[in-house]
Length: 248
Image (cartoon, rainbow, N blue to C red; front, side, top):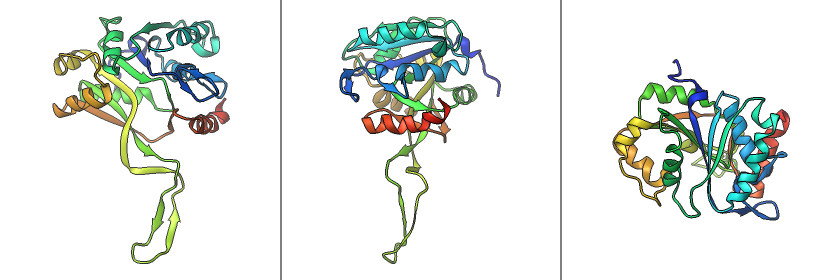
């Protein structure tokens, strides 16, 4: 399946407006949390730049100045930009705004973009973004999300229902039969505007916008079977560092 437009022409909206967290001994936005020696913003940028994306809008909120400083450093870092010139903007989108409002505000900065990518800043993954984009173009829907297996740090047991014997333990702590949204999206601007003509400032993209798209059959998914780790705790940071260490 041919990609409809080059990834260099597709703007990426990075959602980084959540409240600061204390995962490393101080309050800081998740974009600034260090994982394997690099900020989470750097990890997300690297995932996209490796696939040719060059245009980025980071939607900040509480902690805007800290996020802006991290972005300033990354603009001057050859390692972060992989030697390419990036259009990297940090836009304050409100301390308490909903994610749908943040996306809408960022999309206004790219009025001529037919397709817009969206990502949260707090996910470490090896998702194949071009494969997700190809699915999006094929399905011709308003939004395509990346679906991942529901993660758990506990390994499921295989048990015999008729005895008290355990048959075995799963090789990895994943719930295989339950899919969740993995936080990487592609939006078709024209179809999206037709399906969601009105946005609420406090609307949640995940909890309100996406269900409304599913109700009108304009939401598709691409299943990602590789690595996916949200960063919500110190344990998550250590788990992600274990994944990243071999390739660093």
